Amino acid sequence: MRSFAQLSDEIEHRFETGRGFALATLNLDHLVKIGADPTFAEAYARQDLVVADGRPVAWLARLAGRPVELMPGSDMIVPLCRLAAGAGVSVALVGSDDETLAGAAAALEDRVPGLRIAWRHAPPMGFDPDGPAAERLLVDIAGQGIGLCFVALGAPKQERLAARGRHRAPGVGFACIGAGLDFLAGRQRRAPPWMRRLALEWLWRLGGDVRRLGPRYARCFAILPGQIARAARQRFVTPR
Image (cartoon, rainbow, N blue to C red; front, side, top):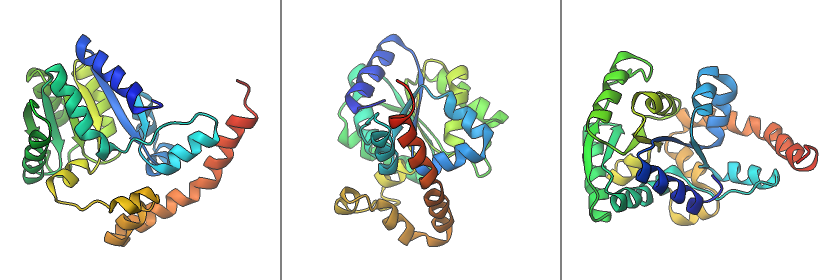
């Protein structure tokens, strides 16, 4: 999707018609995983809606001559909840832990008048999005009459669950939002606005967990030259 206005129109239409969706938020880490994991690539191909979660993705799209609006998953939670409340759609939260889900639910209900969070579920450690526990989870979501489900399991689990949910719960919209619920609940601190404006949120996150994120960001930087070359070819070489 190229803009949040376009995304909003599409989601409003799907709420009105009872059609579900799977929404993924693309960033460089996902591009790394897509190239290395065929299962993740297949799950991404089954997403109905994909937005640019990171500035590098938005820059690459602009270089390719196909500009898109930056739409971080964490920034979209409240606007999507407003769309759900306006359409009378019930919301579910899946991921993290019970304390985080309770805190995120309270924060969302405080910010969005009329929002109904009808169901919350924190899967146990080792949760398999392709296993029987995921099947039961999706059956429960469909049975609760949920219209929008935020999935905060991290990549690739959340995208794989959302892709599966399109078939097991076809009336539900699954939005993959990473650490968004942790930010809402105050369990993690997001980078200050000035760092986000300067595209330095990655540096803030790296400083908080160098051991885990250092190798991840190194892999992201390693694929950039190839991604830049591919975007340039799309703009200047590929016929339109």
